[in-house]
Length: 112
Length: 224
Image: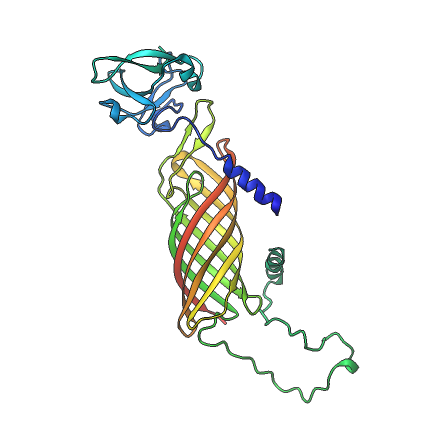
């Protein structure tokens, strides 16, 4: 009995958690994989990238910014160095991107 | 706990056996030789005490409705349950229940960057059906009120349709409530319970913990 309780508590402690979500960051290949939009797998988004449309930085969740990509604003993870993008997998880099509506460039994680 | 589990198993195997009051330790052993038995006057009919109006009775059924809160891979939403009570002793009843949970169909699973499926459903997502075997221990009545606690296990199936995710669960149930006698053989019951257990799921998720909370209320009818 005690072993079972410990196993359950241990399993709860190891609950699934992730740096990404269906909103921003999950892998995807079709729109149904995401809450709103899937940037299909390509060299620009290796493995695919779930994101949401945005008009300004404030439209994006924590740790993300609104970049002008693919004909509109999409939320991408912010970064300062290459290591900040490693959690997204191979092919992702910390690159300068146009801030949507800001007229400036910021650094965000993208493939190309 | 082990005694309760044994009681459940005994009840399940007893089949149609009728519930009897707890044996009186002072009563003579029916297996003892006749010489050891006290003299019996006659074979007079035995009077069976009818349950008082507010009593649960030997057997009862109830229907309850309420809400369940889940999350991740535990379904939540509207909870509907039907229960069958069978008296085991003066204060304990076997409480068998079938419960249904109806939540939203919102998708909550995604593939993380390591390509593993992660599910983070809301508190009122998914659907489930479960059979529970619990022991209800009733405390002493206080007027028409009679508090109780309930403890046991269940076996359930859960489904998150928009994610094409299914699984079976083995949760433990623990909770308590209040029974209020409102008419002869009829009572209102309100209870809350915590659900804690494990489930095995499709889509490569494997074993995941179950954690939920349910609050329900309904009506209980005495059968015998």
